[in-house]
Length: 391
Ligand code: PLP
Image 1 (cartoon, rainbow, N blue to C red):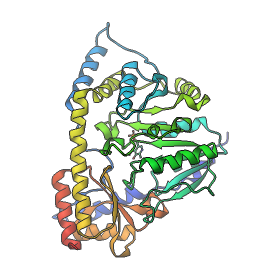
Image 2: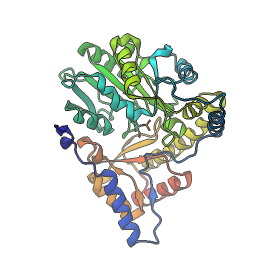
Image 3: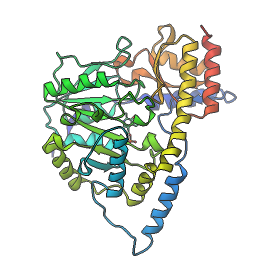
Image 4: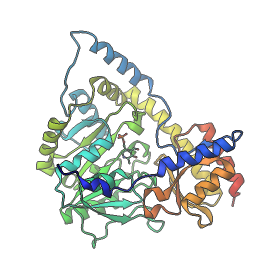
């Protein structure tokens, strides 16, 4: 027996454990101080009422012989795939039902899709990056190269023809930076991928935060993308499904074998998302569901606006926050990410995430999120203004 030694090449991530340790040590020493956490990457608002009703109804169905369901289709029930298909139509993307695969969330599919690609492919990921893209490929022994995101390109790197890649990850709206590609920029990636005969793995987990119709919510809004892209989406941030678990992956038939291979992979290694959860997910796409989730998204977006406006007032450079729950800021006075973390904790008891934890280009930057409560976000930003002054 030989172990997959690639696992030894994974970098340990101490990011969130170090944040938690520093916060709890500070809280112990300063029990009278109120700490506000703006580092949260999880939603905080509950499921909306139409989803809860649909879940209840589905539970009742499961308790009655006539409506009980056992194993379902591995690629998801038609009622949910139909709802996803109709959702795509709202941003002018036509999909066939057999291009849509219901998943238990974007993270698993982002990792699992790699079953379809050979081990000697070169992988291009942005830096800073959602660590899953890197780690899943390191586990498989693939070579990973980086597209530099930085202040000069507003954290939206464009293709560099001198970099040869087979698998390209794009996340827009981006985690951790909150930056969003426009159609012209995505077209450049599509053209580059086609010229390289590469595949784009497009992570659209935050598409619901886009409120400007001219910005693409799906890569398939870009001409030619169906020939070179797979898209991953999730109800986690869209509808508070981080604990309920449901998402969807679109593998266009224009990709040839990949669509069939993915079906084969899923029917072999996956037994589908629970019927109850899929009923809850379908309710998200109902008219009432869309109305209710938009209220929650707008709540987070308003928090993001408050954060972004405050940073602007304080003269702190940042991106994101407009079509994203994430705000990515340049640490003032050239502080390192961790120095800035300590400085905020010591002085105003606001917690965020040091950018250095997302890659080398994250050093000197810091991520704040809008998933906290309105009251806490406002209070945190008043403290920011006091500490940094307005310019
Ligand atoms: N993709 C990105 C960029 C994320 O930030 C996250 C979660 O934070 C995911 C995917 C995972 O989403 P899911 O909960 O659907 O697995």
